[in-house]
Length: 82
Image 1: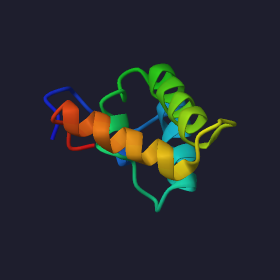
Image 2: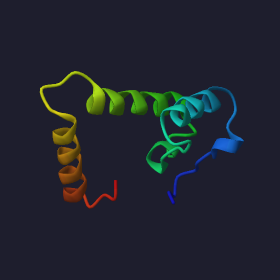
Image 3: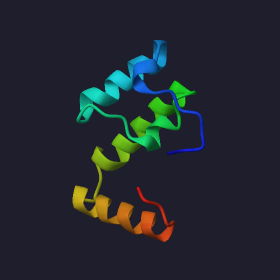
């Protein structure tokens, strides 16, 4: 649980609701906490989502497996659970 104010999906309105709907349509129906911390700024949440998708799924000389391995190493080095 973050110490940052988060707006839950069932409480979302307007732009935030739209962004949550985009996220849940691409996932198993849930919104990761790493994105929820941006919930008071939906435009930033959307930009974070777009950046993540571009890095992980966009054109690259790296395979998806290599990208995931890099993410694991960086998260481990940063003592981050994500």
